[in-house]
Amino acid sequence: MAIKEAWAKESQDAVGKLQVLETGVTITTAVKTTDEEKKVVKLLGEAFTLFARLPGVSDQDKRDMCGKVHACQDMVAYRVASRVDPDFWTVPGAKPKEGA
Image (tube, rainbow, N blue to C red; front, side, top):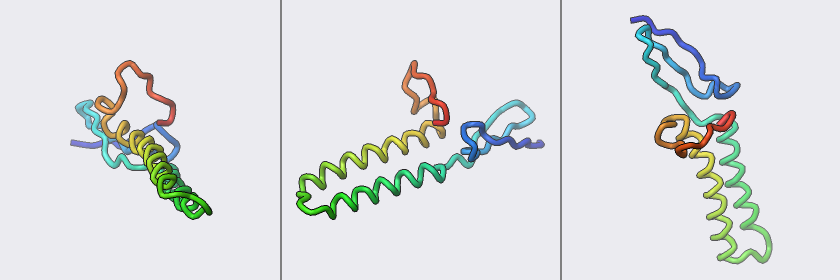
């Protein structure tokens, strides 16, 4: 069976490759974290490191900042998960965001 390839239109970076079978069945493959998403996650980690080195930052401040950085990183992870399995990771009734 011949397979036609088309790139996902979700972003300019072709977030995921779609394979459309002649039968009309569409399957997603190679859905990955974009370079921009990876950069955001890494920069958030760097922000924590820089914050933790500031003079006068307490252990509690570090724990609080760590939790907030992880919450932001979770938002990026949710974007990837919602591309992989949008039926499960999308809030019912919510409109998909452009470029998410």
